[in-house]
Length: 240
Length: 256
Image (cartoon, rainbow over all chains, first blue to last red; front, side, top):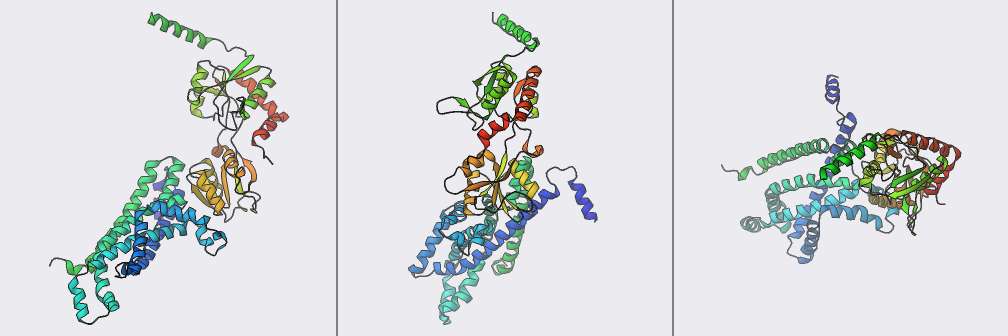
């Protein structure tokens, strides 16, 4: 109750940050978080097998994956989003297909674009980490008579994940910032909310500084989460 | 010599400034073309449009003659002040900033907004009940956005676009149930499009004023109050006797 009166007093006489616009920002925060979290999760799940395939000695496995990561890292995310959101409409019969209820919403095309994009980057990050596995570790595993898959599971992947952690933390932050383009396909994410408030009140500084502060808070949360993870998982690398 | 010249100009301006407003039997209108369908040229170069037709009808009603003088928009108020013409009738929105310089007639037109939907849509009107759960498309930050958000934001979801083209594309794709647009924009991009059939849903909307503005007025010099009054009376007459509606239909009626 006291909190409520404090809150209404805080907002009193403020034309821009009314309970209504704050609820837009809140909905935007929820949408951005969902979009970034789900696309990172799906991207991660996709990236692990892709990274293993990418480091395969068989070219018929590694080349198609290389082509995929090359295309998705070599084109702007905005273009990918446009192609998936507007382009999918021109696929014949898509409106009658079972996928249409999903593709009709702006959220799922955006989710697909972000997932494919982050999966491409994450694949390359993991591939680098897999490649950087110390030769000695692999030779030791072979000497123990481990099969290729057991070696991958027990030796290569666990150490590769740890090596990839700092670079992957950056990818998560990039993804959060890249999600700002979701508002061009009508999604009301954080940036969408800010653009709405800006257009409604002609107040660029208030609208965008406020949303920038929210992004900063989110970035700090991600940074500290990864710092915590690195402390736990990379403890053995700390100088004694 | 130059000084003398300046002084005489000043003197002339003073004399003009204090001169009594005269009775006009001939009024010259300043107009900026093209701004379809309000004022534009036909292929053979003749001026036409809603403003032109209404202006001529008003003059006829008052019993005076009038002529149209084409003037670029950015010099249109200075042109009125320097007596290049006696009034501006060129889709000028009435606002307080302009009121400080010119005298406006009563508003003679508010640009209408309208709801557009695919022709096979079951939507027949735009009310809270009929739009419940629908997706409405608007251009971000327009008065249509403000209106739709405030009136229907709680029952329908409002999708905001940066350009009308993106919105039309999503309507064709079936992502939008209905869009709310400036009527002339919707007419040219949707009703006149070849690819698919669209219809206007419900009435055209020009009210309430806090969303749709005061509309367009004829601008006069501040001292020509008598002339503005004659135009206001004539406007009221034309609105009563159906002439206004006839001209309106000519430019904003459904083609079918």
